[in-house]
Amino acid sequence: MPDIQKLEDIATQVRRDIVRMVHANNSGHPGGSLGCTEFFISLYFEIMKHDTNFNMDAINEDLFFLSNGHISPVWYSVLARSGYFPVSELSTFRKIDSRLQGHPATEEGLEGIRMASGSLGQGLSVAIGASHSKKINNDSHLVYTLHGDGELQEGQNWEAIMYAAANKVDNLIATVDYNKKQIDGSLENVLPMGSLKAKFEAFGWMVLEEKNGNDFQSVIDVLNKAKENTGNGKPIVILLHTEMGNGVDFMMGTHKWHGSAPNDEQLVNALSQNAETLGDY
Image 1 (cartoon, one colour):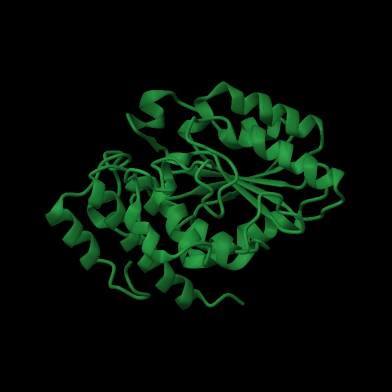
Image 2 (cartoon, rainbow, N blue to C red):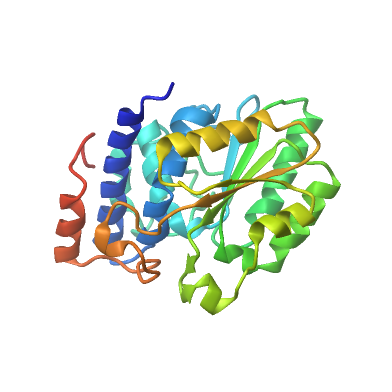
């Protein structure tokens, strides 16, 4: 059984990391990062089989690709807190010559990153290629991805979704951060997506839906259920309902913190809601 209190303590520290990183440069994307904190921690601390002795080949370990690369702050924090690189490096976020660019990149050799992302819509295509590679190499480990719900407005996703089902890419687990918000407003106001569940099912995917995407036990349970259903001839998608800005009350319930940084007063407020647990960088 997972130690939920331990995971909650890590989440508190990750939320501190996120708001501090974005505040320090007055630039970044705190809303989605905060909303996906429980997902990333569940994935890296409970679900994935991965090795912090990083190499690009990832033989005999699970793979993860972040398609909506703008939520890099949460990924960087979780990678550091998992042991991929020193926590102190978080202080270089978005600085000149930093390995921690605003969107994840590979050219600087940052441990844990295998794809430059942030040009929305491309992550699933890369993940499908990696899934094929796993099968060709008789590697039974899995490939995980994360996508924004607004990102699914990009057409390349649906070509990949159609391809994955047609080619029975059943070692792939995709998750959609289903917070129903994007940078310009709600999904309904920008470009309504209709029923994502019905769409994925029509394209031949197995769909799991979790309404409590900011509850650790719920996230872990749905990820485990997805793992149990791999190898059955269908790719799997999890529609994970999250709250943008989760854990910082004034950032919740609005799209306005998708890509806005807190000022000094707001940072103090956010940190006061998340007491230090593991040590700041």
